[in-house]
Length: 637
Image 1 (cartoon, rainbow, N blue to C red):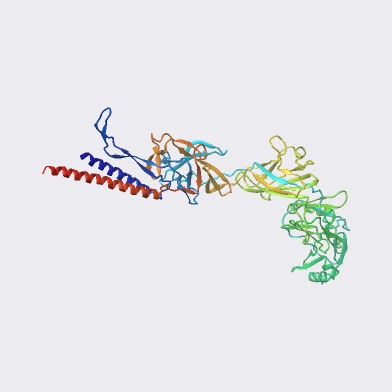
Image 2: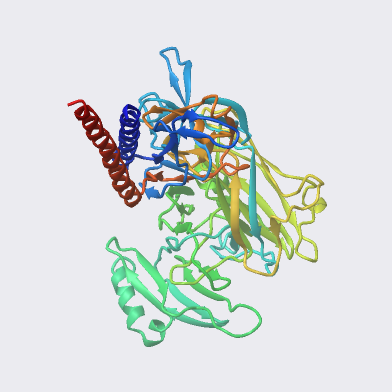
């Protein structure tokens, strides 16, 4: 009977230990990535009472708690929204390491708890300060398979100079060469008779319009679809004001239907069209022009023509002034995009300025030549002014389908952004010239070339220079100069890469890219399901920096629990095998989530009841055995 007492005691001990396991599970019901444990019982070796070939008598000696077995089932995922929170969905454990003051790893442990934060030094650590391990990703984008601490520095990343750029654009095959003609003044000696034209090289946003200075005896003419209608305004010099002209034009039924006059506070005047000046119908776009005759004793024609309907462009304002005095000199002044030309006169007050004089004055002045370039037209006294910006007509609807402009931001060696503009001008159907430019004060480039397409709208490489053009910019930014940017138009075989086409659709840029960038600071990090940690920089770049590594074991149940949600490798677990998420048998990373405890409270409560009953029953074995012993002791009496 003494043995039965010890058998009961073993039952009490084993069930008490099982109750402790249940209590541990319930206590960790909210512990991140906690794995529930179960109690495994085993009988104690029996005591042989009698043996034999046909009859054997053995009695058990009780029960023992053989082991506690963790259940490595997947826990539910809880969304936290924190970038550095990560859960493993599937097999695997995070690899973490303890660091000493010298930065050396002193201990490697493993964990399913993915609640990480960056410490003051930039290391990604768990709540106990253990650093998450991974592979560093090289600049080429490949992971170097050497286990290292995941560390994101807080300093700036260096800039990268632009060396290549790609533009996906189409240049309209229906475009044709030509200029927009704007007769400005007559330029012969004594009797001006030259025409001056402006060639628009680029389109843009709505501009400031073209302003005209009125002189004594002016007459206003408007031509619509070739039908010229003339409105003449005659007034006394020195007494008629701009307001008088406004009233005369606006109150005239015929004039008011064509143009609208507006007097400004400073006495100057503006003319704007009240009709569209573009008529529908016909195979060719309707031309519209606004003509003004002005002069003192000589008649001068000023004609402004909008070639086709479309969007308004940036304006260069040209103003011609007759000083009305004798012995005046020709002068050219610039105010923003406005060029004011004061005409020269002789001793009698007659205008002596020729078209060639205007050409010379504009080209000799650095400020005006930055806006327009003037040149001789043909063998006569006519002059041609080629605008470097688009010209718009106040009240008109002007567009320049024969031109197209594209701007891309490139970077110099110290990370300065530079707006590189390429202006395209149609020379003839299927053939375009291009000119590169950068803002004043940034640098100078003379790069230019020709783009030509075949009958299918594909780039004709040989007729377009035979390779990738290189745009060279002499910089004034203090960076390494020149900045050479290769414009990728052909592939490695020398054939067109298809990024520029000449199809019969409107000219448009659909995509552009370049390989440079400015310096940047890390503003945040991101983690993908494959465990790639990328730095998000202030310059807009996202750079892969580290690859998280997971460890797999032959026996997860054999891992030693060391506390703080961490495990240690043991003989029973086998050696760790390292790999990256989503490879082999390893699971994936769920960023912004944490794995919850897999403890099932309902199951724990049921086991608690059965364990309690088992404990009570074993206690009855002891009390009953004691009662029997007492009866035996009573026999002596």
